Amino acid sequence: MRKETLFEQVFNLSLTPTLVMENDGSVLFVNDALVHLFRLSKEEIKQRNVLIHKELFQIQEEEIEPVRSEEETFVLLKKQSRPYPAHIHIQLLKQNSEFNEPLLLIQWQEYSSNIEKQEEVIRKMKQYKQFVQQSQDAFIVTQHGIIQYMNPAAIQLLGGNKKDEYIGRSFLQFIHPDHFDTVHERMRKIMSGISVRPRAEVQLLTKRGIVTIESSVTKIKFKGNDAIQYIIRDVTDRKKYDEMASKSEKLTMVSKLAAGVAHEIRNPMTAIKGFIQLLKASKEYNEEYHDIMLEELNRVESIIQEFLTLAKPKKETMFEVKSLQKILRHVTLLLATHASYKDCQIVSLLESEDIPVSCEENALKQVFINIIQNGLESMTRGTITVKLEKRGEYGVVTIEDEGSGIDEATLARIGEPFFSTKSSGTGLGLMISYQIIEQHSGHISFSSKLGVGTKVEIAIPYVQEPVNV
Ligand SMILES: Nc1ncnc2c1ncn2[C@@H]1O[C@H](COP(=O)(O)OP(=O)(O)OP(=O)(O)O)[C@@H](O)[C@H]1O
Ligand SMILES: [Mg+2]
Image 1 (cartoon, rainbow, N blue to C red):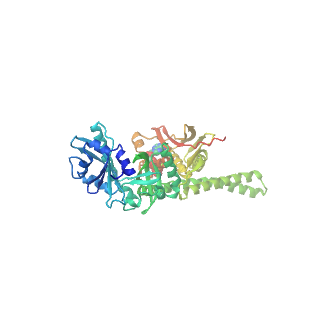
Image 2: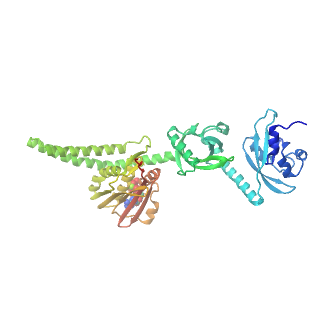
């Protein structure tokens, strides 16, 4: 008698009922666990063709098909002699020197006595699979950063034709170098069970060029091991639209500010001119006059500087740690004369302790300017109070006006693109502000009383300073 090889022994001793079949369904090997399950002899089982002998196996051709193209699948098997559904797992065995044809390995997985529940699970699994296959969103599964699975939408997203082009490659190689660290860090956090923000915006390098995506990421089990599932949406077009809206809003803001800035500069200029005339008349050096003139010139310089940096088109979004106090001081400096021109004043109550936030400075300034502008536009005279305080993990800026207030119908529509009740309004100010604050992981809330005024709160998480040991 031929001696069993080690693998034959292991195969026979395995507790998982297992069968190896050829492409056409003829049974090649059967192990003892399977014999035990079917209560037939090995020879009897081998005489039946898996694809033809429906009374025993009931596996459909179409269920085997995806396996042949190297996808793994779960099928529901009904054994007629003692009818119960079983959950079986079919895998392709790669080319083997002994056999020319590819072989399929079928393993019977645990089946619960609760048949209905089992059927339900398998049905849901199939539905999910179908859903993923047909989804417009791209699904990618990675293990240790290597792509293990992708659906047709994911192949399309990366600009390819077949998934073979991508399976087995590192997912990170498709990430734009600027976002590499963020994505890598998110992967690490997820694998160690730390929750991450549900959506992150990153750029991918694809055959179609640079694509901006939003993704949600979860830790899942894939083929029994920990894996990461990315659900990805292409937001390139939406980004373009947002950028256009953002640009046009910025232009409006800058042109509105220009009048105020011109005014702001004219006043100190008048003062300086006056002092120069005085100096000329007296022909004497006067230190006090010089100091005042220098102070005024410095002020003019900083206003022009502020205006220019704000008006400059941004090259790229750069998040830096900046002081909220400083940002608010700059904004109020820019708007002070504009306010007084309208018989209004801006009062700042800023917490003395520094509140650092990770931000794109100009974008935050734009938000505060938009909101203070709205306040100014709602008043004929009065005060706008700007307050800054720490609340929990947030730096909270409160901007309160004494204007007309907002009725409920308007309040519900605030932030909608192009919604404005003003004849010259573009209705983009608050939409952009909401977007910017969302990018800073913060939030904005409005409370208003008709005829009394409006209070806007902007909360932004502040940077916890490292503890000095
Ligand atoms: N502080 C406020 N007091 C009263 N109404 C306000 C206030 N802030 C916003 N609103 C209302 O919300 C609407 C939308 O504001 P938003 O800033 O988005 O656009 P806008 O000010 O009309 O135009 P712009 O694009 O020039 O800012 C305003 O038209 C106004 O009706
Ligand atoms: Mg506005």
